[in-house]
Image (tube, rainbow over all chains, first blue to last red; front, side, top):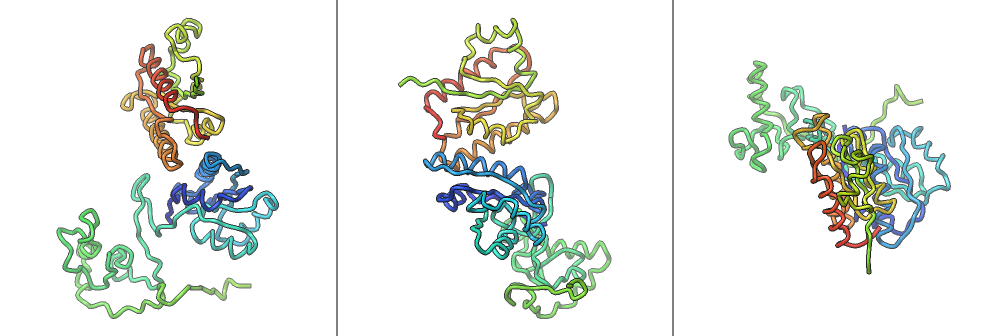
Length: 222
Length: 135
């Protein structure tokens, strides 16, 4: 899922300091699961914005609501039920949601309440770790299911580098060297021999290097 | 200028048993501050961050929670969960440039103990010193 965390309150309050009617809009997708921007967090943020503006000597109507998701047009359309009730939306969705509202509501002010951090998984309650970089060219079948793009600091295709020590990355001794993990795992799977082949020079055009990406599925378009 | 703070207490059902003694008059006799408004909850683990923030929005100058000892909660981790939510509120107060000490968690034994009155008096003194809430 997409992992995110709330921006500092001062940053959010500065965005809306001149607004009089503010809709704090939650997303019931990924950001609910990672407890960053679901209904509960939006309700809390609305309260904190009210308190922050009041402390600054300003007053505004601040209310919260939620959408099933903020990354599908049919759900964005539900914003219309609040028409006239807000002069700005503070979205607690990931960056996708904020962009999508901006795309579909060209005359609305929309501000991000979160910093979108990465694609990750719940390592344990309250802890998430990055697992995928969305690079558009998956190599997990070569690496035992462990991603060297997202989980190697250098995104090496033929690791480990010389900085790996005792299975830990040179950037931080708390970080596992994913290439050590790949070698160990491939060994357990009796596939380590496959790692003797050099990975070819990688084409990064499917990643961000090729500009904004778009995917068209002719079988689904109507 | 004299100032009597509006203080809200959210207390565990068990740790606030003293409030029931002597038909509810014992706390008063023990100098429990009259300006501390108590809400008893079945378990402080049930408290939401929003409940504490709402108290500030409603005009509280200080908000505190009294739960079971961290390692002796009737519901195992209820008071530990409450402490996390109080800490989240304290952190948010800090972000807003407001004294974190306006919110506090107390872990107190169940039953009749002077610490329950002591916690109220401590909050009363602390918040009185800080003055009215800036909200």
